[in-house]
Length: 154
Length: 154
DNA sequence: TATTGTTATACTCTATAACTATA
DNA sequence: TATAGTTATAGAGTATAACAATA
Image 1 (cartoon, chains in turn brown, blue, red, cyan):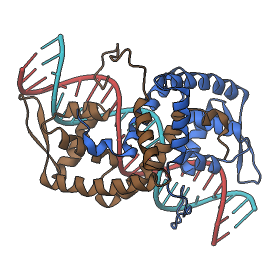
Image 2 (tube, each protein chain N blue to C red; image 1 turned 30 degrees about the vertical axis):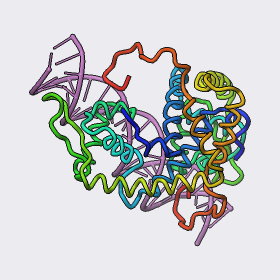
Image 3 (cartoon, rainbow over the protein chains, first blue to last red; image 1 turned 180 degrees about the horizontal axis):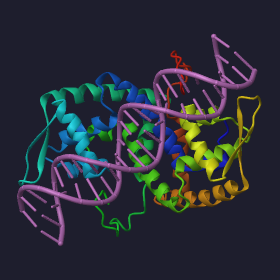
């Protein structure tokens, strides 16, 4: 089916196509772990930032507190992540448990293989360039705070 | 919150981040039309491939027949797209109606502005390079057909 | 037998709103 | 008042499975 020049000219569309292809492959690579790429990301973020609370994790994942909760519930049920007493009586401190560490290592390896598969047609230099350009996407600095105040990610 | 080198090193993760940022901006740019970026994509595909059936559209969108149906139902209800008799008595031929054409034009303009905003920090050359590299993502040619046969996108 | 559209159903992910406890 | 967690509820998007009509 033809895309036409309208779609081809949009960077956002090309990024979305690339995301679709890569996410599907990464998800397939993780089926045996029964955890989505997003949950792997959450575990890695907890590993890199031990003691963070759920709200902070949600912000890093671009989801709100309620969605972050559900995510943590699943990881906690599977004994991959633990809620410990936090900086005050309200907050939880999230920590990756040993079983979680092991799982992250194995999942990361599978994900790296998927990544390598998807960049097989590119040179190492091209991959580096792609990385740099992807980081350059986004609004032109300027205003960083939303004017609206709601109970979510802002 | 730190990402750590594990996430930063994954192209798939960077693509996902980029997608998240760009999709959110594009979606915001389309709120007044009450149609998602994905529905704009569907309309563009129908415009570029008039007479296609729902199954083909679904394939192009990477969704199955059932999901494509729901999409078309919404667009048909709003008189943006029409189902006409197809190549045989089973298939529908999809066509973009005049009102749909007008809406696509307006939405595309809004989307292009969003796109420009998100690439504001890049030169025209860099945008071209990014396009080319994104197209290079994906499995190394080889096998294109799934071995499994199911009632979906394969 | 295979394909197209369709319907019913369910699952995942996420959001909103309200509530509790704490600050 | 504001913040962290929680719960209930709802919505979007998509998938699976089955069926009828047609090929």
